[in-house]
Amino acid sequence: MRYRELGRTGLKVSEIGMGCEGFVEKSYEQVREFVDEMEKAGVNCIDLYAPNPDMRSNLGKALQGRREKFVLQAHLCTIWKDGQYKRTRKLSEVKEGFEDQLWRLQTDHVEIGMIHYVDSMADWETVLHGDVMKYALELKEAGTIGCIGMSSHNPQAALAAVDSGLVDVLMFSVNPCYDLQPASEDVEELWAEKNYEKPLVNMDPERQALYEACQRKGVGITVMKAFGGGDLLSEELSPAGKALTAYQCLHYALTRPAVASVMSGARTLEDLRTSISYEDASEEERDYAAAFAALPKISWKGHCMYCGHCAPCPKGIDVASVTKFLNLAVAQGEVPETVREHYALLEHTARVCVECGSCEQRCPFEVPVMENMKKAAEIFGK
Image (tube, rainbow, N blue to C red; front, top):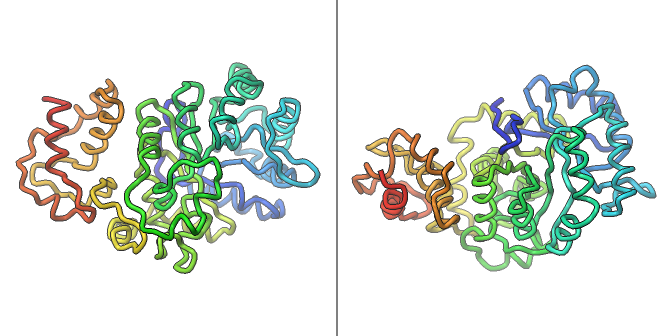
């Protein structure tokens, strides 16, 4: 298992994480089997958005004796009321729900306190200026949560949270279909059939800007819906018009800027093992470029996907990394110090490009690589 720094938090999380759906409506023995499998494979990050009390209790019991091996991403504002899940911003309910969560998990702290499901600018303003953020900051000050996170499907609300400087971790829906959709305050728009009736071209610029802002500001991203609720894995259901593999979806998410871990929506042990096996998959099995280039309803023409098909460069340039740093600088309108330092550490920079064009011949997305290398050499200098 490979581990990544979760932004500026100081936490190291496994590339493959675990969504809590797999724990819901299962016995303690079944939940323990999941945790055993995770521990064995080195999966250390668990998202806990679901407030189901039995799930929380079973997981808390299964974590006993090994709690310190896991990073818990526990949610504020998600409660169990009248026998079902409810999202709330009422402080008394938020406090009661979070305290119940700690008690059932048999712990006095969680590594990430995730403000749950902020999908509109109005809701972000309510959270920011209301009791919820004050409570989250109090919990962080007390050490009850290690850092503050927020979950969202809307790049506008998410970017506002990132720009506030208060949010250390963003849980965001990342996959090759959702990334082409414009911002919306209605999450169902992401998978609505009508939005895929016409061919879609290139990533939504607000989503691209969000990922780059997270990278620049040290906000780690944990990914939800990498498989689109399973739809992307089905030829019949995929909004892209063609099925992708789990490995391709995972690799796509893990090659986006700032992404640290993908919360696998594993409902069975076999689902979990499939996601874990990504770590041992070959480059050919992970490769999404050829599959994406052939999707009938989607085109990324001209957009660098950081897929690495441009390699090898005869001068040894890591073209994908140079392009990523270039995009970060262009999005900022200047060269942030951290980006400049990372660029300078490259063994071969854009200035050694001889414009042989071999990279462009191999690129499945017709990216103007030589032009990007010229821009990078101008922006970063020597």
